[in-house]
Length: 390
Picture 1 (spheres, rainbow, N blue to C red):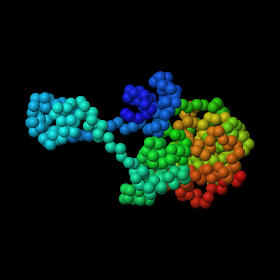
Picture 2 (cartoon, rainbow, N blue to C red):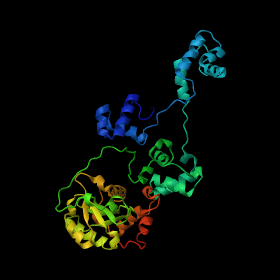
Picture 3 (spheres, rainbow, N blue to C red):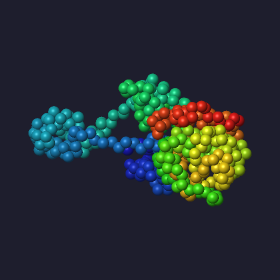
Picture 4 (cartoon, rainbow, N blue to C red):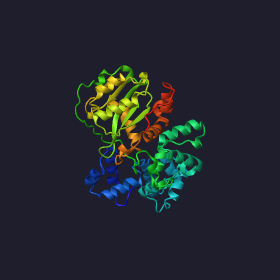
């Protein structure tokens, strides 16, 4: 494979990539391979966590079997034309094959096949490396917190028919994560929302529960229009926590993906959360307060007060089923770029949280046909969202 620190055998590299794709931790790799954790990390960092594409022989090239026939023909004293007839190849192909591998006296099939495979390596300059204008545009969008997929789709829309100004999101990821390509600065991965130095595969996922609350209404009773995302006004919500005990509440509309981040200056106890949500969502018109879906966290113990104040039913996911409010889960993952786990979220003002939400709401989204949540939300309520001030 030719990737990674010196000392990893081909078998070790193959096993490492299998474990990496499976989502195994680096500690598990360390125990399985018998290698040190720093060496495994260096191996993954060198390739950006992106497994190399397996090399394949091009159809039409001489095979090892054909080279064996050439070797036998030489041993039998046959001319190149005769050997070519036996393998159904042009005589010039056989002549060049013999000449480039030491001539008749030195030709060996196995060595010739290995040499041909090595000569076939073609280090290809990436598109971003060879196009300074395109590289500058991509770097500027990364600095503006756009994802590679958003950048790729935006380029395709802004430069239709211009292949030179279009690039796939996978190419952007490879150039960002692989320092060996020398396209961007080695610290460019900090511009990505995950802020990871290597690309992690979709690995193991564990769900968890946070207790029981009374008089819950199951998500199975939620209106069909909410499940089908037919109309705006059906929200999903959760808490995003920082350093204990700080947290903020996040809300996202299922239909338009419009996000709202709510400050919790009084903490995330049930009463404080209910008060903050009522204060924020009461500013929405009634047709945009159709329902709210939450997990079974104890911060929603006062859900009845929310329903009474807003005329908005609150539905609860099944225990250990966070994917039932997957839109909010995905939104929270995006928000982690700005709301770090080691930050005191209680110190964030509502004005600051509004600007964070605006970042998400003005990014194009694939699920919306590459329009923004703000544009989609504007079709159902043209006036700006009257968010609570600091």
